Amino acid sequence: MNVNRLYSWLKYGFDEIKFIRSANDIKIFGQKLPFLFPRLGDNNYFNNAGVPPSLQLEPTNHCNLKCISCPNGRISREKGFLDYDLFKKIIAEASGIGVKRVHLYLHGEPLLHPLIVQMIRDIKSKGLGVNVVTNGMLLDKAKIEGILSSGVNSADYFTFSVLGATKLVHEKVMKGVDHEKVLKNINDFLNMRKKLRTNGPVIETIFYAMQGNDHEIEQFRDNWDGIVDHVRVVRKISRSFANFKLGGGSIPVRSKSCKHIWERMAIHWNGNIALCCEDVDGRHIFGNAADKSIKEIWNCNGLMALKKMHKENRIGDIPMCSQCDQ
Image (cartoon, rainbow, N blue to C red; front, side, top):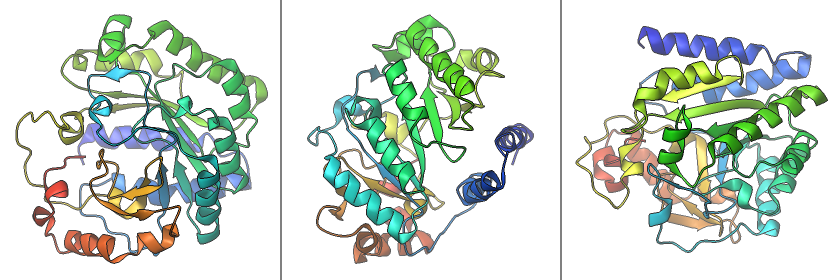
């Protein structure tokens, strides 16, 4: 691990410790560590848990923006919204088998779902952590108040994708975004959290560096440092994701196992369970959460066979995984 990366992780850890204010916060901090440790190194990572440690659940694959780094506009599978009854079934099962966290986003803008606040409330009522990644455009004061009264705490994360430090670049990279509106919404969220003295959720901004915005990395850090809880910069955006169906040059065959297939179950809005978050079109479906339990699908022969190939370092034999740099 290089010095800059080590410093970033140490700062991240210290910023996390700020949320420890009670014995329960210590417990929550301990529950976060298994998700953090695999990201500290570049080695292979395997997890033989009999249940998925977390779910990546798609409220919708509709989006209100057209980011130049996102393949959403090239999705060929049907677009729609997660049925609330199916959502409740999935969350009840997850809570019952020991899932710890729900990533409430995938290939769309989660705040477009009309019941998104209720979904967050339901997740928290089951004692699970929740992660939401949003472009921030739809986070009005009503949603902010609803989210902050839903039971969120230091286990939870709200991540704002802000792919530019300036209005010019932000609106160029994330087509359709309103720079000033996003900044206002984030600040409203921060101010309301402070006013209500809510110990969470953790609020962070993230910047994916690419051609067109990489010259603004340091300005982005300066803009948000000391304002939000974490300022994250991803210096190499996944080419296999950004260039989905576009080509854009070959990607070296993957030589290390992917963390996602071991720690997350990717569930599309219609209940289909895909290989991972990289399976944008749902080409590799292992079952549907409406028909089978998530534990049953997590341990199905198809997924277990793929994980075995990862363990045996036969990743090159899996077409989708071999050309993935996620």
